[in-house]
Every structure is written in C-alpha cells, then in structure tokens.
Image (cartoon, rainbow, N blue to C red; front, top):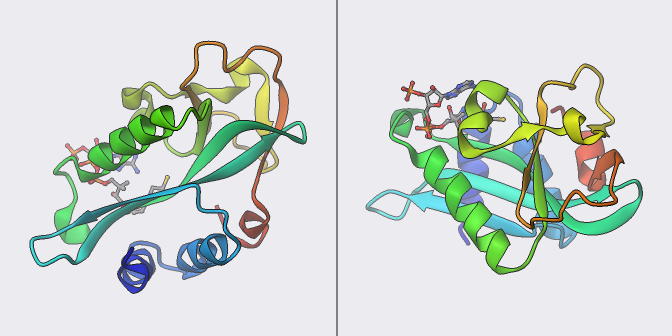
Length: 161
Ligand SMILES: CC(C)(COP(=O)(O)OP(=O)(O)OC[C@H]1O[C@@H](n2cnc3c(N)ncnc32)[C@H](O)[C@@H]1OP(=O)(O)O)[C@@H](O)C(=O)NCCC(=O)NCCS
C-alpha cells in the first residue's frame, strides 16, 4: 500500500488536510478495514476509497463506513470512483461484512444502491445529515434488529466531514 501516494492524493483532493490525517490515524490505530486504490500506468495513486468500522447503538454489527473517497482531479469523470466503490462493496461482501454507511450526496451514491439511512431508523451524530447519511446492505438481514446512532471510529471525531 502506497501510504505517501494516498496521502498526496487526499491532500490535493480535499482543501484542508484533515482527510489525509484521518486516514493516517485510522491506519496507525489499525482501523482501516479496507482501502481500495486506483493507480495510473506508472503506479501513481489516482484514486482511493477507505472503509472503517462503525458501531450501531454501541454494538459491532460488522458494518463499515465509506470515507474518504477521492479521485485525482485530472482523472475524474471516467468512472474511477465508481470502480473503487464497486470493488470495495464486492470485497466487503466476500469478507462477510453486513452493511456500509456513507455521508455524501444522495444524487451520487443512490446510483450504487445506497438509500437514506433515516428510512431504517439509523442516524449519525453530525447535525443536518438526514438526507446525506445513507446505507447499503450487504447481507439480506443486515437491518434486522438494528436502529439508533451509528458511530464512526474515534479518529473521525477530529475530522471535518
Ligand atoms: C467525488 C469524486 C470522488 C468522483 O470521482 P470520479 O472518478 O470523477 O467519479 P465517477 O467518474 O465515478 O462519477 C462521476 C459522476 O459522478 C457525479 N458526481 C461527481 N461528484 C459528485 C458530487 N459531489 N455530487 C453529485 N454527483 C457527483 C457526476 O454525475 C459525475 O458525472 P460526469 O462524469 O458525467 O460529470 C471526485 O470528484 C472527488 O475526488 N472529489 C473531491 C473529493 C470528494 O468530494 N469526495 C467525496 C466525498 S463524499
């Protein structure tokens, strides 16, 4: 895993450095469940998607959060983010994770099958995120018996979302 390449990409893609620092912390703390990387012909990092554990109502239900997601400006609009997301979902499914949450534009994530988390009585701690907070189920019964607050890992408490 090209950690410096991922760091460079994230510092370019997000004006403030918080997302790069977030991934650094997640990696250091062993909280990166999955990182999916896209590279160019020379092996340079041009896209990255990170998945890390989340807790629902304080319990570990084998759900993860997708964040951050970034593609280098010169390589956008070619479906790279889409590939990163699909590969991430496939891999998580193989490893029997049960669901994924994301905070982002519903116009974008709905095309992958993400739906409003609020419809499943799930919310996160950040204000005004009712439409932006979305979920994707990997297991058929992923939503059975769960509701309440979804908490990201501790390093997210220091990152702007
Ligand atoms: C969002 C991002 C990852 C998309 O990467 P990408 O590889 O260009 O995405 P794809 O090619 O798979 O999809 C592009 C399409 O997604 C849609 N899209 C992209 N960004 C979007 C956004 N912020 N909101 C809604 N739709 C968006 C557009 O319809 C776009 O279609 P177009 O190519 O016809 O213009 C990239 O723009 C990026 O890194 N942005 C900066 C970081 C960021 O905002 N990350 C998302 C945090 S939730």
